[in-house]
Length: 165
View 1 (cartoon, rainbow, N blue to C red):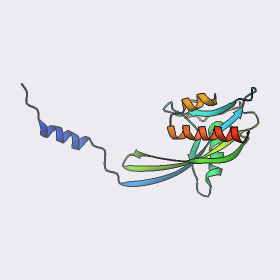
View 2: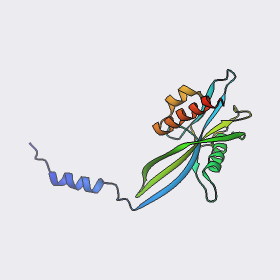
View 3: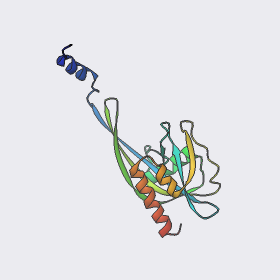
View 4: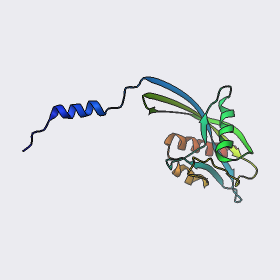
């Protein structure tokens, strides 16, 4: 019977660890829960499918000189091709973190309720996306990959109902 080599196990653990975090990066972003009413007057929510096949909402980085509302509007236009829209209400802020190499990225995303206007079927997704689709409201909540965003979609649906949007 072969004896275990505990020292080798420790060496493997030490050499395969990720590098220590050397910096913390803050990334402010903004996006929107986009809705429309279909011909039956039912609410539909627009979701995009990212490169990892996760359904989410359009969002992106706040550029210098921009505020979060302007960023949400710009990013929605860029990522969906929708040109006519109206930013209605601020729904909330979500925070999450992830590692990028030796950096810890702290991302804050401001989310707005946005109404799609005009020809909302004319969508033009960006190349990096795997999909873009209008979903019935309940299905959109089920499809969304991030619980925090799902909660803000529910809040947006409540505002749509209460304000008769």
